[in-house]
Length: 242
Image (cartoon, rainbow, N blue to C red; front, side, top):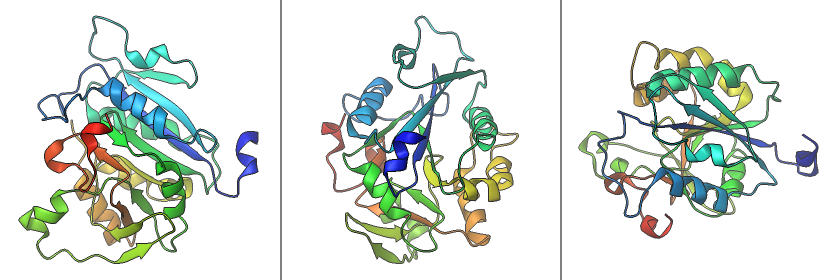
C-alpha cells in the first residue's frame, strides 16, 4: 500500500467481472465499434493508476475457443471462477472482496465488463466521496431516469464538487462504488438480491438500501456509461470513447 500513502485520499480498489459468455447481455444493442476488449482498453486509458488498483474476475464456466483477453495482461491479478451467470459471479466476488484486509475508508468500485469511462473519472469518484452523507456512487448517469414514465415524479437533491455536479438517484446497476466499511455494513443486503437468481435485482437492492437510510448519487454528466446506446449517459459522444 506504500504507493498510496503519498495521497490524502483513500485508495480505490476496483474489482471487474469478465466472462466468456453472458446470457444477461448477449441480446443487448451496443454502441458502434463496441467490444468488451475495447472497454478494457478504455478503462486502462482513462484511469489514474497512482490511485487505483485492479483485481479482475474471469468466469470461465462456459468453454471458449480461445483464452480470454484479460489473461494477456500481467499487471493485475486475474481470479478465475466458475459461476455461469451474473448473480452467481457477483456473489463469488462479494465473498472474495469482503474478506480482504482493506481499510474501512478504502473505496471499493464494482465494475462490469461492458462499461466505458471518461478521462478524469478517478478524481471525480474521489471527489464524490467528499460529499457528506454519501454512501454509494455511480458514475453512470442513467438516461432512463429522464424519459421512463416510472420516473415522472422523480426528485433529486443536487450537489457539486470541483469537477462536476451530482444528483441523488434511486438505483443503479451492479456497477457502483462505496467505502469498504459500507460494503461490510450492508453485506447481507448485497447478497440477498443476488441469491437464488440468474441476474441480480440491482434496482430492488438499491431501493432497499434507500429504505435503510443509504444515499446513492450519480455524476452529471456521467463519467461512465453502460454500453447500450438507448440508455447511455447523456451529453457525451460515447461512440468516440470506444
